[in-house]
Length: 298
Image (cartoon, rainbow, N blue to C red; front, top):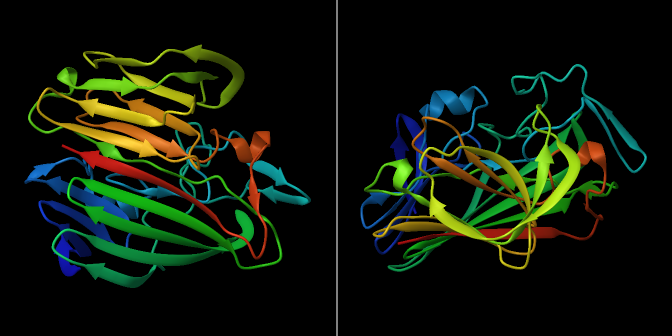
């Protein structure tokens, strides 16, 4: 592991042969660069200032909830949470979005190991907040090999309460060497979860077949329940990046905003606003929950 600076911020660099990953430990343990054979596969619009403002970029962890909450109140078991005085980041409709850790400090960098063809880095952070009063430790392990970055996230309860599991990741992906309109978006067979105008699921679901087609002028802001195959792809004839999620990520948000040179393919442990709508899995004290995904590059 190499310590350096990225746009003025302290950074950690992992190297595995032709593949290099850069992480900002003081700004949310956010991945800000991922290069393979000198080509860039992450977009970081806004840089450190955006992270300090609670905005996402690069490869950010969204915890303790991914995406947005449909209400400023939620209940898990016997615990009721009131967010009417919530001062964290919100979307255009005033809904709490992206959790509490985007751009946040407090991470403890642990073991780092590396060789010519592999590198690993582990970091942990404790979380107990009025907006999420379920004490726990979150651990992120980055494992880099040539052409592949695997990120494993583990939740460890540190109090007496069961901890709801609702985190996700928000990779801002790009394919080098071609404009976005020529990138092919590959999605597996899945179930589309309709969203209302505020981006919250309506309860309407529809099966959708797999696809692989150029983005062209299309835009997306869509939520999906994934099936057995959990691989989402951006590709050209020359290069590609795949998001390969394990069983811990049964949902994904696909975000292709107009006029931006990136696509977000976001693995999520639960559907958007599941803390409000219910059905969130929990992990008991003495137990742990882990989920992993990989970014595969060529």
